[in-house]
Image 1 (tube, one colour):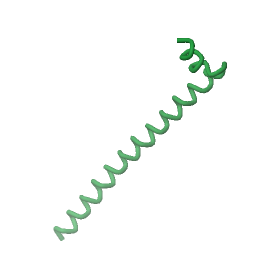
Image 2 (cartoon, rainbow, N blue to C red; image 1 turned 30 degrees about the vertical axis):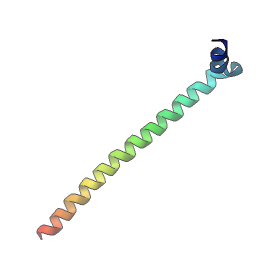
Image 3 (spheres, rainbow, N blue to C red; image 1 turned 90 degrees about the horizontal axis):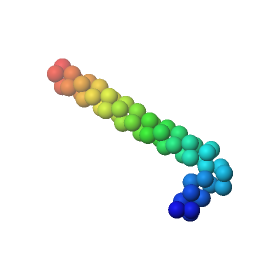
Length: 56
C-alpha cells in the first residue's frame, strides 16, 4: 500500500502529473472520436455522390 501511495504521489508532483495524463488521454479520445465521426460523414457523402452518378 505504501508503494501505491508513493507511486500516486510521485514525489509530491502527482497533483500536477495525474491531471496532465487525464487531460492528454481526454484529448486523444476526443480526436479519435471526431476523426471517426468525420470519416463516417465523408463516406456517406461519397456514397450518395456515387449513387447519383450511377443514375445519370
